[in-house]
Length: 108
Image (cartoon, rainbow, N blue to C red; front, side):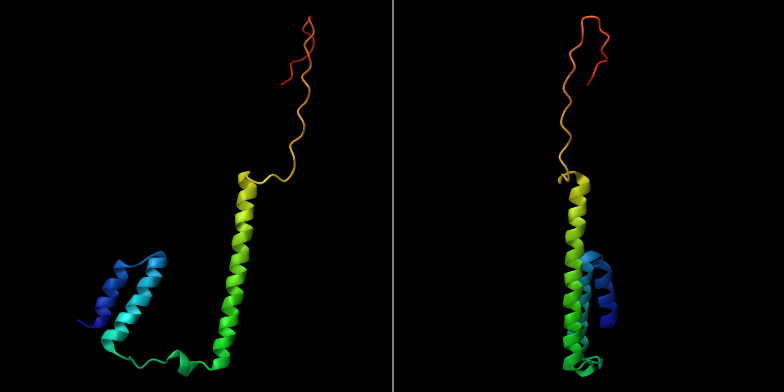
């Protein structure tokens, strides 16, 4: 049984959400440690310095956009949940005193 089998078993047990991403990184690390260099291209060989800088700029831009969307969503959740008031409620109406004959409609 090769390292791919054990990595596959480990990936099955460590799947889902952020744990799945950590499990994937751990599995890649284990394969590199056990199998040595698999002959795949490395980041420094496949990308030049300019391409890496462009990717970093794009990732920082995407991170900023996600943070903006998160802030907007949080604001909308608070607005819809009632924790933020956009306008003051109207003033209460004065209670009309009932006459002795009872012809005034009840208010309330």
